[in-house]
Length: 207
Image (cartoon, rainbow, N blue to C red; front, side, top):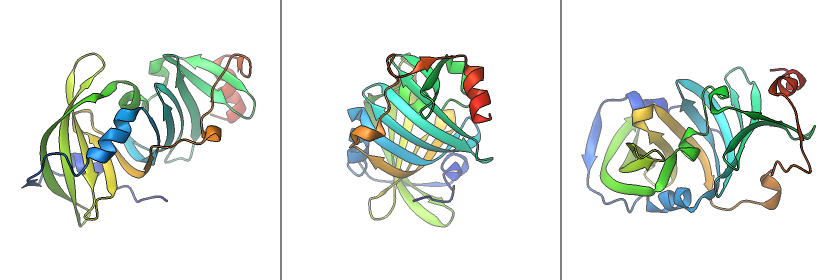
């Protein structure tokens, strides 16, 4: 299921409506993020770029595939505090720096401590003709910097989007599932993957 990208208006639309709340409306979705194990699929604005992303998160380890508007796909992973570019079909992996990923789709998943989220206030915002409810939380990054997290739902309580407005990052969520199937998570083990130079994988996949 894909949704037309309207999430950018979460950030740039200036007119919001105050609403009463205490975080209960979005608490369940926050708890999924806090659990550290989930599947996340959606369209996002990362560093000003529109990307389609599918991420499997398992207690600090992450495997993600994403593609840009030019339909260029990439498979990347974050395991044992290291970043990798990889080809599952060829069983190749290449360690990369955090700066290699531009934009870095891992920033919300790696550098935000969802356990520190504290309810701040609530509101409503009209996005492309539809009014969505949101709860705003303060949240700390792993370096201790405080920032904001906003979780948006529709009028039936279904999750619409997740935004980090101070970092201009927003995701229109198609799926946030707290369960992972065994086959969905790829572990880039030393015994199964061969280490190569990133350029070898880039050439192989036609980047």
